[in-house]
Amino acid sequence: MSAALVTILLCIGYLVFTIDKKQENFPVPVVLLLLGIGLSFVPYFNDVEVTETLIYDVFLPGLLFVSAYQFSTAALRKNASVIGLLSTVGLVLTIALVGLVIYWVGGWFFSISLAGALVIAAILAPTDSASVVSILKKSAPDKSIADIVDGESMINDGTSIVLFTVLSGLYLETASIDVLPILGEFIYVSAGGVSVGLTVGWLLSKAVHITHHRDYQVMLSIVLAYGAFQLAESFGFSGVLATVSAGIMLSWEFSHANKEDHYRESLSGFWGIVEPSLLSLLFLLIGIEATEYLEWNNWILAILILFVSIAIRFLVVGSTFKLLAGRKHEEIWKKSLLISWSGIRGSMSVFLLLQLGVMAEGDAANELISLSFSVVILSLIIQSLGIHPLSKLLESK
Image (cartoon, rainbow, N blue to C red):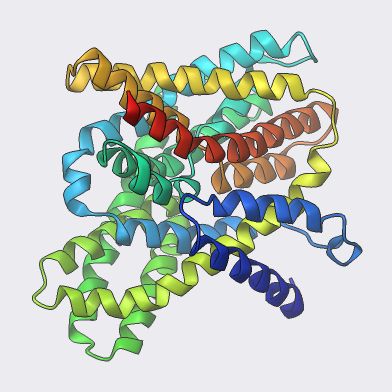
């Protein structure tokens, strides 16, 4: 991307975020996405190319680190069991059920294999909290809902990549179903990523304490965010889980420091600028890139899949709460419904889509990509816009 293009996109992002400062419950990512779709019809933006490498190596580490670093370690301890189950067993169950429904319903519209349906389900599995957490914190009747949505989003990004890799291998016939090797690979990638992140996060948190100059502390945080990611990836571990773990470790270390406010103020001043800048560029670019994939005729199927996936997620989330807490029926369904609706698809799903586009070719793969992209766009628009009204409706009941 040229410097001029980046500057123009940042200016647009600035205007949108300025509007957000004046209006509550304003879904910034949705507005950026729609503006990006509009920009795709302007000749100047015709040559913009968004690659999976750009999203994975540039945007995701920074955004994940900010979310993890800002995430309360107390909230993580309180909701660890729910977040852990939803990000692992719940994610696998969701992919299996959604995949089966896509295979059954999708066959009415075009030819699709079970492996292809499961790949779509894996692409749609990771959630993106950027669109909804700020709205949930203001409007959700239960304030722990935002913490659960945010925590799940950080962790299931890593697990979803592992599951997508396995299922795409089956779809492309480059791998076979063998439970033990798949489970071993999952543990290796996940545990390795967490271990690297915690280790690097602990080491650099000590260096931050030694470094008293704020500028150098910010430099170390950049090294931590992107260094943990690249180090883990170089060993074949999950870079996503490494960055998330590093951010959480840094936050935990700061919470036990004598000058916690001093350290957080140093980093927040920098990352508070970086986060909206990355979000502006990312969602505008997603909108520009999405247009070429949205020229197809199966929008009814995309809408069906979106609402079926929300319904299945509602069942999984509700079952998880019932299993762990045995809460009253009314409390479970309200909380589960809002968490389920907040499971919006976003940047990680787009990365997996672009990754599939690189790995697979042909009309069948194009159908899968177009269908998935349509569901992602619908999810971002419909679910983001519905968060505040649904929160208020549930609160009134």
